[in-house]
Amino acid sequence: MEKLKKYCQSILPFSDKEIELIGQNFKEINLKNKEFLFKEGNICNFIGFVASGLIRHFHIRDGIEKTCDLSPENSWVTDFQSFNLACSGMMNLQALGNTTIYYIQKENLYQLYKDNPKFETFGRIMAEKVAQRATEIAMSLSSEKPEERFVKLIQQQPDIFQLAPQKYIANFLGFSPESLSRIRKRVFEKSKS
Image (tube, rainbow, N blue to C red; front, top):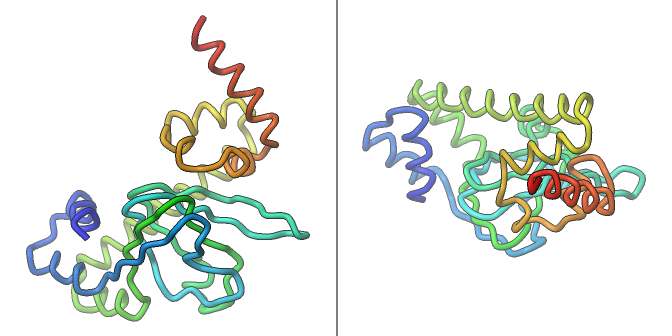
């Protein structure tokens, strides 16, 4: 819980009483490799903070898993469409490796917003960060070359290659594991010269 509290303090200056509210409203869940935090078809009524580990966001289309994002430590995870509209989720959230999540139920979050405007500001900032991340992913997939996407991922999330299997990283970047191996080799050869 300390990691979540420190993260929140780094975004906004919360009082000791407000930090105490974070501890009272967020619950901890520990997931093992491949365990699900959320499965499509259910209604998502929580937002989670990744304290350690990695969460893979994916959906299944025509029987094939499509990795949409990989959320490392200090990331927020939910199925926003399901959360906002109270509809069946289309996304799966799965732990890759041992993962600790602190989550808050929707009704508790809304009560915090109602009781303290600072939490509403914090929620807006977090939602903006998630929206920015989704926009960056969409722009990257539509306009960057595969090698550029790979290099950007190494720069932004260097630990991802120790946390996620290559097939999920490749799928997230929009190419096959074999292409990822070739691109990785090419990038490392260029960096040596």
